[in-house]
Length: 395
Image (cartoon, rainbow, N blue to C red):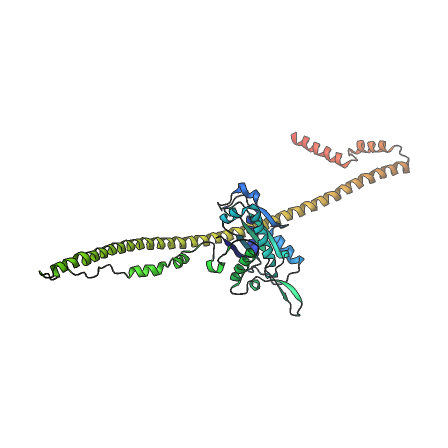
């Protein structure tokens, strides 16, 4: 029979962007080879975030005025990974599979009176080996402040305060799903397995490896003492009886002892091979753990470099935009000054002509330009001066 599987993970704020890109399939490439990108279009959301997980988290905190201190080291969101085995989903069909995840979604919103409003995202993936749902939520507890007023408080440690919190979660989820018509067994809580697969230590406990090893090592390889046939006293009165003993008792026992000895020898050889295999596996497990630890450190380092780069990029972009905005403002002001200067000059010339009866203003401007070799229009005057400079340079 299949299991009702629900696993919980806790995340700090610095982890949210990576979780968001994976769950919402925002990455271009994935290290997880089980992801089949040709099936990603089958994925769907039971709750789709409006923004990325960081912005969505901030929005929920502000909207519902959540209390509680948020530190850099604080776990601020939790993620349920909800699934069962692939055979179970094949057996119940597409419609029941969708009902399974919809029912699980409802369970989460009701469990510990959380409330659907504190579910940040719920994404069902069909593009891996077995359908599963990633459900991100804020671990909110409903409590009171010092004055006794009811408040909602973000507190991961309080949400999972009980020592057997995960066991309670497993029991509640199993019972809820069975009550809603799903034929399932209770899954093992994370506190018992720590992960989806057995470790070497767990495997050895399950198979009683160490106990079996000790028992086999204590088995003596020597055969028990068997009476020598030559030592049996034979006379004419007892010969027939001794022959019967020899043929019917001693020889069969001797044969059985040799067979047991042979079987025991084979068991010892098999144990030796298995011992070496387990020791090698333990070595590889240790090396794998070290590599995973190094990878986590490298990942954190890359994330820190990326954040630093993004901040510098933002600062640089902001500075350039500021300077451009300032220059645009200056240019606009200069254009206004030039335009006003043109209008003022025109008015001044007309006033001179009228005041002193100089006749047409255009004739006056023309005489001024000819006699002073200066154009009234400053733009044209600058262009003339530039051409004269170029001409002098060529000479």
